[in-house]
Amino acid sequence: MAVELDVFVGNTTLIDKDVYQLWLDGYSVSDAVTIRIQSGILEQTGATPDVLESDTMDHYRTFQMLERLLHSPPKLINQLLFQIPPPMQSMLIEKYYAFDEPFVREVLGKKLSKGTKKDLDDVSTKTGITLKSCRRQFDNFKRVFKVVEEMKGPLVENIQQNFLLSDRLAGDYAAVVFFANSRFETGKKRLQYLTFEDFACCAEQLIQNWTLGAVENRTPAANLGPASSTSQIDHAQYPGANVKRTSGRSYCQSPDSMVDDMDVDLDREFLQDLKDLKVLVTDKDLLDQHKSLVCTALRGKVSTFNEMETSFKTLSRGLINIAAKLIHTKDVRDLFIDLVEKFIEPCKSDRWSTNDVCLFLTQYTNTARALDAFKHQCLWERYMGTIKSCIMKMYHD
Image 1 (cartoon, rainbow, N blue to C red):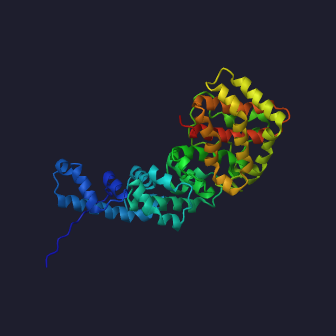
Image 2 (cartoon, rainbow, N blue to C red):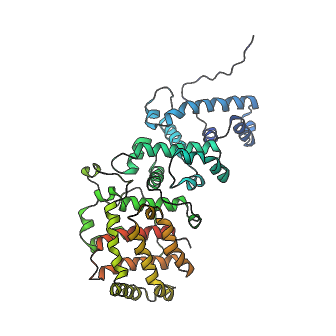
Image 3 (cartoon, rainbow, N blue to C red):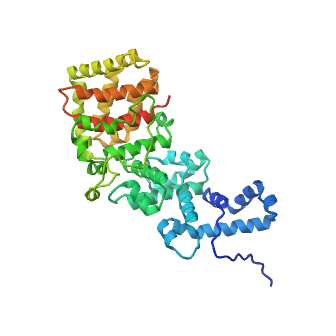
């Protein structure tokens, strides 16, 4: 009995990037063949549909064999079975761990558990991303989380070392890990306008300034007093400035700083101390002085001065009350909801421009240095520097 076989012989492993993307997107072989035919590949190559199907199946088999190595990228780099040039190895890893923004917005801040994975059918339907691709992306998030959750040292560096991702993609995964650990709420209706990029920028600020890792990595200059702490609050120093993500850290690192804690856990002592900031709104004299200093600095410089002057105390109480409640786990989870509800929405209601918000937060933060009776300058600037950067990223005109 005659048996027909398709045989492919080679040395260097051939990787078709387009077919790889179809495999990553969760398409079956037949669907992938249809898409390739629609792209005009038969006319370009002179191949027959049968040859194209065999070629597609061969690529899919290769990708399935590579997948176990992609789960631990250093193994892909060090293995000898597949002869793949280094640039192609990097491409395989980067694309395998890439994710779709609609998908990550659906799972950001949720527990990376079996319960969440069971809901991926609904996520697939809502986003239009295939279920197979949703599962791959979810499993990647969970895999990275499990590997780095107990590691010491900078979160982004740990991810890069273990998964060989680019700076940007490692930073994105750091945001996913950080949000999953603290379970920040991101799915409420009033937060739907925010993109993953917005949340990732905020995550970077929180990691750099509010975590235990940030405490370990602070330079002595960060604690010398108000005048020497301004570098932490200059992300929006100039009108209309955008808060941008970087791969660097806000503080200098020392070898000994890696031994205690990591970038995932918030500094509970710092959150406990934030209640001391309530004096800015409970002490009437301090509140009035603060308002006077801000209004004097902004008179004639913002387009909504009257609205700002009228709402100053309400906005100040909102920001301070958010700080005072962060010792509670639920209020930490609701941080972004509270920022939108207590500050962003009132400002939008009064038609503040991004420039107005930037100027207000700059003066609101800086003028506290002139309040002689206020004795918590370093705490204040550590809190407001991060809050200011987050609000500036979250405030969409």
